[in-house]
Length: 283
Image (cartoon, rainbow, N blue to C red; front, side, top):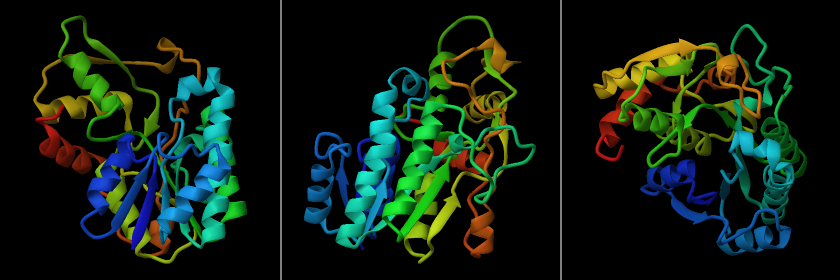
């Protein structure tokens, strides 16, 4: 199987290149090789690589920056995804597109499953939802894989930020304790995507780690596993206003994995422990 990975130099793309390469022929492209907002460039890259599958990771993921650079967010996340989807259809490639928990509004009192209504509250979420819609419209042979709270080798991520702050002197770290989600390692996501690549399913699937956490609880577990004694205290979202609204609940239910009889994602605590064990010298 030949897999073309867009956004190959990003945090997830780098992990996929390493994790999938032993058993698949992986071709990585990034902005210097192919600007996904340019349909001609996208068509040329996919035609030349002739992949069986395109893993579309390229995106503008800086949530707050999307609020101030809205044209760029829509160009990359919506138009770029439409360009990739159209080229996949023309050249007979299956498309697996990475999306986000931010397509949901965050006000449900349980984890969101794949069939729940979307209601994004930010430009990032709105532009990613538009990208999902373009994928469904332009490339019938597709999977949309939503994930959340990603961290991976080399970062940048919340985990890397917390470890950096822990190394500095100062008062106790204040971390938000009223937002709930699924911390997910890029390695766990890569393994989930490998399973999807081997399975002829079509549609939307959630691929975040099992179990829920707040950012405060996530931080405490990072420090516990890393043997860091830095004090952490809980605070509210209102204590840290940001340009983009954060969903109170962005936890994802993996309903489709269960319905399809596929291997479940690992518990977030287990994935975090494995990540810190494998990469402690790099952090």
